[in-house]
Picture 1 (cartoon, protein in one colour):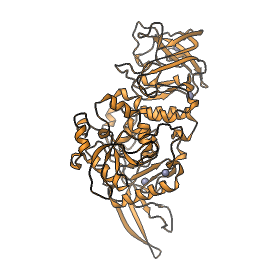
Picture 2 (cartoon, helix red, strand yellow; picture 1 turned 30 degrees about the horizontal axis):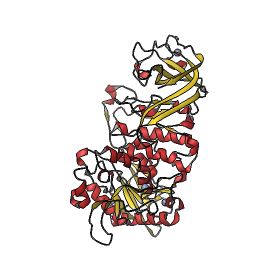
Picture 3 (tube, helix red, strand yellow; picture 1 turned 60 degrees about the horizontal axis):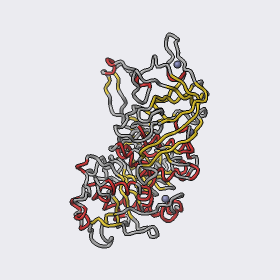
Length: 533
Ligand SMILES: [Zn+2]
Ligand SMILES: [Zn+2]
Ligand SMILES: [Zn+2]
Ligand SMILES: [Zn+2]
């Protein structure tokens, strides 16, 4: 929304200029005053004679209000009647089952009566349910179903037992006409590995088939409400040229948090920092986001906010994978965004992305290899990682980004033209080809040679490399800017005769240009042929 932004206060610095760099003494003299931008708007249809103010729809004081429910009805109604794409089954989708269990909240025209039941629908007859997307917070705040509590949950659940957020979800679900609600903590038996695996593999259909996904976006944990009290709005009448105009003044609403997923400012929307929630949002046919200052509706066709500052067709955003077959870049973008988010359980790195992988599994993508598509090899080897941490337990082969914890970036597009792929494979650990893996390898052919390690620092590599270990480089490509990329490898300790990825070499194969002009080069052996563990 453009609006008119009035800056009430600005950062104050005693010496009157901006501070840059690491001058700690000077930084101490800064007094930071919160910069608060105001937005002045008029209702739609009203235009002040001199123009300038944007139109906005009025925002209710509280997101649990009747006005907000009416707004959701309006969006939902339009989506159900006018949006063909939101009401058809997802492309390439074969697994159309609903969840295994749901919470039955009781007949909509009768009293609330909560209990855990088996999902009453089937593949032919999808019974509508809402699904909750939320931040788990601390374990003890959550209300979980375990083997011990399972029978009692099936007999009944008292509303007062539920944490605040879940009670709100029950109310929202019933208000939009859904008797059934899915919440993972209650519908999946916790600490039961087998039950969890079955349901984790169904996230694609659980979120993809939900009538509406309720996103508790601003709530940090189940013990807080889904609803929020909005920042105050000053409203006054303004008389001008014999007419009266309604003017609203409020703190500027940040709309970027909903669209710019490449920016990782998660402070106001804790749910966006959660890795699991990433696919929950992208898989959903429709989501209602309960944001910090307004509601945001997102379906496969539109994204819209309560103040009307956001009204974009979803086609303009390129992340909905089913919509675009520019899948190679789209997948890299998914991986970059996904890995910037937090996971509580490290071994979920592949499972929490498995629903999106399933959505991407068009025949032309080839096999899925622990986060990498076969058709995108050897290019997909060109990833780097910031602040890599290697998990204690084996997770994936070293050439797959999923083998490490940390945010992933791709070096460049088409960065492995010099590498020839011979073969690659991963062995799924369970039934799900998009879930965890137990083993894997890649065999490539290319120019390969030892790296002069002198002058390298430990953080030049993604993986620890000891003094005694030799590092070799596999030539990947030469970019337009005279930059060489190479895959850095060391001998595998796990598999005899194989190599293990330990980083990406950039420019004269990693060595920095020294101030004394002494740069190193490596010898490449053309046509070497080897496997990477
Ligand atoms: Zn829609
Ligand atoms: Zn808005
Ligand atoms: Zn690429
Ligand atoms: Zn060098």
